[in-house]
Length: 594
Ligand code: NDP
Image 1 (spheres, rainbow, N blue to C red):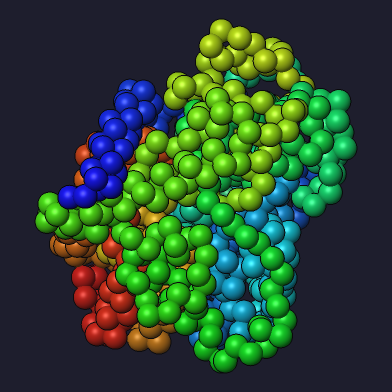
Image 2 (tube, helix red, strand yellow):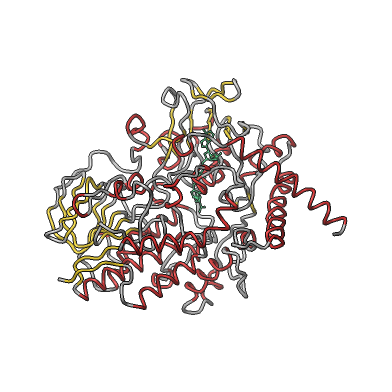
């Protein structure tokens, strides 16, 4: 060991102590239960600010081949794949007033996708669309969703501003009966749940949260009628206002610089800082775009996923913050102590680089210190932004660090931290979304399968599925969610793979006269075994992490142990699906034919 090695080792040991300390500070007995849903006493927070009130339509009574719940990318891609297979008798049921999912709801200022637009946006070769920027803004992505809706003629199939009440399997008819909040009764042979991954907003369970007398909303329900401006225009109404934002995750990182532009005073209430890397956005060069050869999109998507799952591809096509940060994969399942040490060291050096960067950007040393993330790089989602850290140099921006404890209380007039009240006119909750809560809770309905068994009953000890898609006792129900399924930095890569698999299943069943398909209990347990074999490294890693949605707020219950994702590379998960389809024997399912 050289003297340099010794110094790094000492810094690493000290960082590990600090990581442990910061984690312990944040662990709470209430775990996931610390958050509230946007319903009941918080139902007002859930109002859709983007539609005109008073929408009505005649209820539908019809029979279809497929009902898809969710008009975000997952639902749209499923519908597009069905269309390509010649299946057009489908409905898309969507709570929002348009397609877009995440990109319909998230219109907060500064909202954009920090995954490169050329890899994130699907079907670019088919639509011929060229993204304007390397990292597209939310309005552009929402516009692209609408373009997909028009290009593939999905609008006539959509039932917007409609929520599902109850889906029930009818064993005699071999169909699902689906009733909705608009009085519809739709029977369908196949039922696809594409209800979203980060769609169910949550509020922090802070005492007094309903007492606040100023205006308050969640970032996914932005009220521009109050703030003025728009996603790209300055929020003029904030010039005389004291604004507070609770949360410092990926959303807040994008919203804070825009709020800082006009708010009289902006208070950023921080429980755990995010790690912020360089983003370096810029326009997409049309001349370069035109040189791309057919097939470029799929190659780029796969290459990116390759790079961010730590296996260095020969050429890094995207070559951005993500691919540089994720290159070295400390989650790799290895028991070799030397390898573990190397990975820890590389992880530490990467995070230390991000901590040092804060000192370079933020003028006030105390503020800089508080903005430093003390955890490993896979513990929380890394963010990439070039204006967030500099915003703390503005005199109107105040970081209120809660030392890992979170906001203490909300009063009629503001927010209390460390006994001090911060009076506010506007309070914004950048408090995130449910990710690891029960699927039925996130979907907002509880399907009733064979003999009336509900999903919540069948999954009372956690998820039971084959590939995260089919489940026993729920014939012809196909799920697109992270639960027991793949996961990747580029969500769209995962969603496209899942949508393709689901559409293939439906098409095969229709072509082969299969009237019912569901997973067998044995296959579900086998799949769980596969999930366990790949989760090893991550499980060990996440025990060192500060709580967050990546590790179910640090909760380790038997149920959480089943509700896991496929923790290996998304490319491997996709390969499972491909091989399973190619085998053509529907292994692990129980099927009946007409
Ligand atoms: P997150 O869950 O990442 O962040 C929620 C924030 O609220 C955290 O900082 C959390 O602190 C804080 N918080 C919760 N309770 C309290 C409390 N009582 N007091 C103070 N702070 C509190 O939600 P986001 O909406 O920021 O992001 C969610 C996900 O959405 C991202 O991880 C990403 O996957 C996606 N996203 C993607 C973007 C993209 O560019 N592709 C952009 C934006 C979002 P703590 O960390 O301590 O829990």
